[in-house]
Image 1: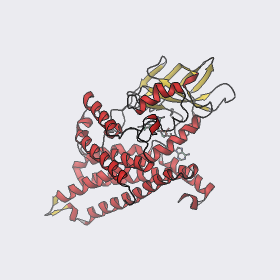
Image 2: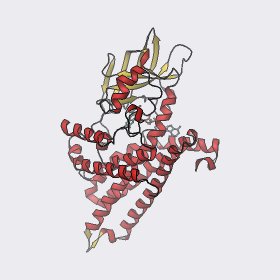
Image 3: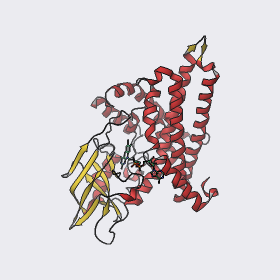
Image 4: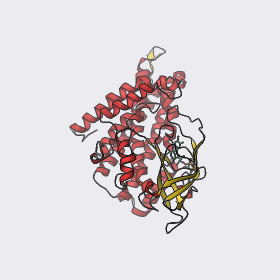
Length: 388
Ligand SMILES: Cc1cc2nc3c(=O)[nH]c(=O)nc-3n(C[C@H](O)[C@H](O)[C@H](O)COP(=O)(O)OP(=O)(O)OC[C@H]3O[C@@H](n4cnc5c(N)ncnc54)[C@H](O)[C@@H]3O)c2cc1C
């Protein structure tokens, strides 16, 4: 792609080289419920930190890499080339936090998270509140110098690895009754209980348990920002994470096209390589074209973040890139499985793994239909020329 600086290209290559060292561990992880030996997983995390590929989204004054949005995309794109979430060691802590973290939050959790010593998890979704976050029923009741949290959260990704959880809850008392607030809950804490840990389509070391918060008491200093600001942080995180989901989808798609093309070149059917067959060529041509379109959108959106374009406009654009890139990646994974034939149905095959793993990109951080609603809403409010 045009317009990458020398620094961008160097960072991209560094991330690519690191991702290439993770790829040989994929099948081992797949066959072991996503787990690698503890010392191997720890070494991967250490390497990501030492290579400057960790906390690329965090400002330098809290110890982060202070990368541009485009550079963050370049790194996450490479993380996306690796299956089984092994690329998640290039982690991005909550970038909205430094501006609102109080001193206790900063020293106890934020700075260690940026150093890679701790991991967070997010407990927002509930059984009856996913797309409609406003329907949350988890409550936070003020009691003296504390809040008491009660509710059950679903799909809490990385709970098994996390040192603390961000819990979003509805306030039951005071001037902000009925509004949302976000709290840091240290893990483990009295009253926090795993209800169960369901199995999911992908095979990764990060679990997504259902977690009950039963009379969990946290000091008032664990409130993030102010009462009533819970949704504000969610929106900011959605914009960031939707762009990064799209970036990882680009990486996955690139890998799928490269692997499927290499296979089609080597596989001889009736005396000719598959790559010479026009029906196979069409699948690869469509895939490469869609990747180019998606990459153009994602890089352009990252550049508009770096240019400081209006947040409301960015909100719509981040939805567009998440919608397009995730749907596109799933189409390409489906074609790649088809090109690999029976091999594409084996778990040791990259296309089989991506076929399962990419499906969730169309669901989490706002399902595709939710992105469509956001885009249509922005179109009605701001008009097409403000969006594209
Ligand atoms: C693997 C995994 C990890 C996750 N990790 C986390 C996490 O760490 N923390 C967390 O808080 N959450 C997490 N989630 C939850 C995720 O964000 C939600 O699943 C997602 O937002 C969709 O919500 P839902 O599952 O309740 O679906 P629902 O809201 O029940 O929606 C079901 C379907 O209806 C569609 N739909 C909903 N509303 C409308 C509408 N108005 N018009 C048209 N269609 C509509 C949706 O698009 C979807 O297709 C995770 C989910 C998964 C699968």
